[in-house]
Length: 129
Image 1 (cartoon, rainbow, N blue to C red):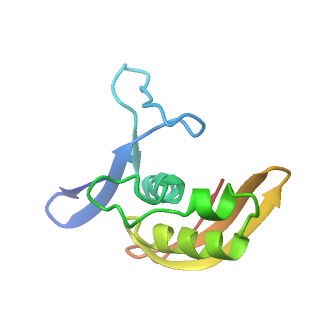
Image 2: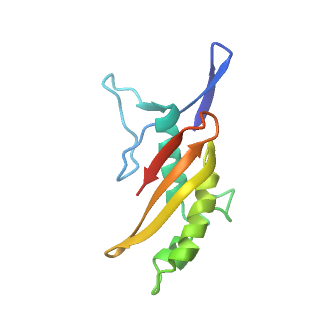
Image 3: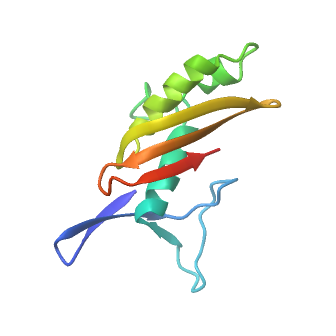
């Protein structure tokens, strides 16, 4: 994620747009990297933080979601998964609060629906997987 000043008086969040399913970089109509701004950038970065497995970040080995222990094990522990997911979401840029977080099984898949509060705009955003 990136932040820059516009006219020296306002912080704007922006990030490179990626595909939802494979996390590949996307290009705009001119062939440049596609960008997301403000609430779209906050939502995408929150999804990225929610998808990060515990130990995946080289310099932050203790952060991330407990996917293997809580979601992929022989017995799914939704309480433990929800707790680690909430902690990871709160680490995302500009997330000031997790207003609500529902974690549920959809067949063999563990999914979530979250409502977060943007710490800068105070707006509510829905993020899900």
